Amino acid sequence: MHLVRFLARETEEPENGELHGEMILSPRGEIPLSQVRLLAPCLPTKIICVGRNYAAHAQELGNEVPTRPLLFFKPPSAVIGPEEEIVLPQSSLVHHEAELAVVIGKRCRNVPAAEAVDVILGYTCLNDISDREAQKWEKNWVRAKGFDTSAPLGPVIVTKDEIEGPFHVMLRVNGKTRQDGSTRDFIFPIPVLIEEISSVMTLEPGDVIATGTPSGVGPLASGDIVRWRSTGSVFCAIACADRPASTHNEECAPLRV
Ligand code: ZN
Image 1 (cartoon, rainbow, N blue to C red):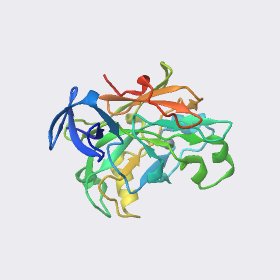
Image 2 (image 1 turned 90 degrees about the vertical axis):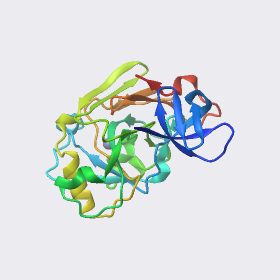
Image 3 (image 1 turned 120 degrees about the vertical axis):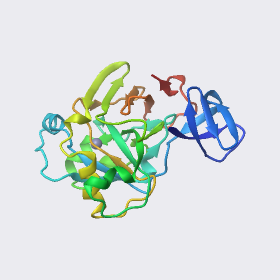
Image 4 (image 1 turned 180 degrees about the horizontal axis):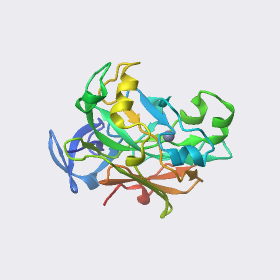
């Protein structure tokens, strides 16, 4: 299943549905994709991010490869849907980081790696927008990684029965490929991440684990159109602005591939 959350023109409440081609199946019937605005596909209570999970990315920023997963948070307030804009912070350097996002399907704690797949709902795309300037001077990356709009998420959750890793993770800016990697190169695979994280905290349905970015991270500027995918099924496309725009850019509509 391809799960989406959306706002239809005639209602003001977010709804859930399944995307089938250009149609959404929802409890109140079939709704054409063209009639809705897609939202982030889940509402995480927390986003747990994994830093430096690809050796080539650790090297490109001059960092050591970690011996235990390097974890940090992005707050739920950082999440935006696929038709919103990244509002760039005041910084001399803001980077994109295309990532495979694992969406948790049930409340869990102390999950052994061998059983980790049981707690996964599915997979989606996250862009871990990062203020490198702040990342240099603050240790815990709250300002570097937690600002509003720094977690574009979606547009669909592909359920685990439909897709199996390894996943292709790629990103383009203004049509040019910047990142093109595979989760085959993970230092810590998904089951190990779930075991490690759930040994510390309870995971809730809709929580997101952002699994790290492959090499090729690079700068974003106002007006850039960023497209990325991590599940092989849907591109997420988002524009950058230095202030929120009042209208949606046509270029931002999610594209089927
Ligand atoms: Zn990241």
